[in-house]
Image 1: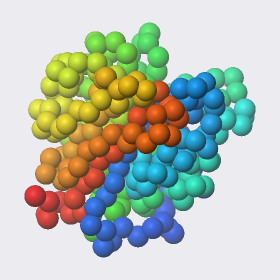
Image 2: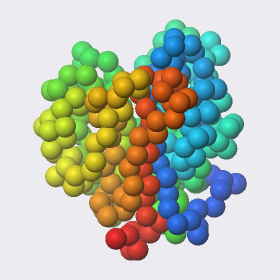
Image 3: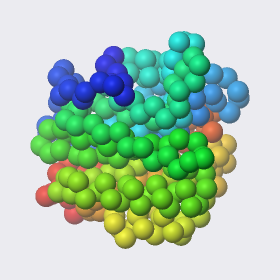
Length: 255
């Protein structure tokens, strides 16, 4: 397993599965709830098994807890999926770290960690990662936004400003946006930048009612399919269900 910490540079990875020749690229976003399932059981192995069911090339994870306690979700997941983990720590606790992560089977070209914190609320962040998918490069912004409406408005404003960098690259924004209303102001701003995408419900996992986990894709025609992964295991592994997107293999061939 390769894990890029907040202090490490982002190398170009070798030895990963080659993307050239693939007809599609699968991505997923998943709030793993610290690997504590609906049954109250802590099981990184169960979360890893859900991700293995999906088989995505790039995954955004939220509420990832790692540290000296041995609750090291990323190690289990990366070993099973042969993936690289890029961490975005937002909280440092006595014996652990907590925050976001991006898993990728593709070589990493660039990483930027964005601070989206709005004091006095819980620190938040985003990972801005560029990966080499073979025939083309893909920019992924992975985030977990705050609980308060004005907090999310400020966070989305920062994300939209960041989009001006690498604006020429195909871009995916994904994560848990904590927006309970489909037409909240931050969502409308994102629609204006990315165009509208479907919003299937992912929370709570037992009987989903709310579309807290979201995908936006630019150019919009790259998005071929968007599904909730609702396997029996996914219904118990976390309080959220994973959301899975399939992109066309080439920006110039997407219809």
